[in-house]
Length: 175
Image (cartoon, rainbow, N blue to C red; front, side):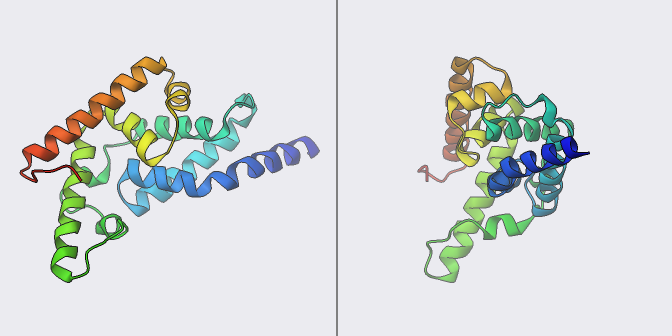
């Protein structure tokens, strides 16, 4: 029993400081608050269940890999569908001082979110892990089991595809 308690305490010590990070990443991957909360919960449960396989490397990276694998096993993000969770858009920092500018910014954010969602899964997950998850190229490579060059290539391609989609939408400039 003591070993199980020590294992749980050790997991808790490593996992709790990563909770905000996991929520950020889950929101970016899942697209809405409810799905993100479910994804974080399942990631934590799976992390605890398989904690014995953790080898003491980068815990954040290990948990990101678990979340990514869970996300791959689920349906596409909810925000791909029309009428996604508008709370996600509301949480994007808004520099606009008046209501018209706020509406325009929310519309741009929703379109950008949709464009990210439309990227192929391999490109989207690398982009999300880097931009939302703040993982290094090396951490992403470990989490996805890819060579670092492939991570860099996919990230470059994801950014270029996103840029091209944004410009094709008629915005004229990349935010």
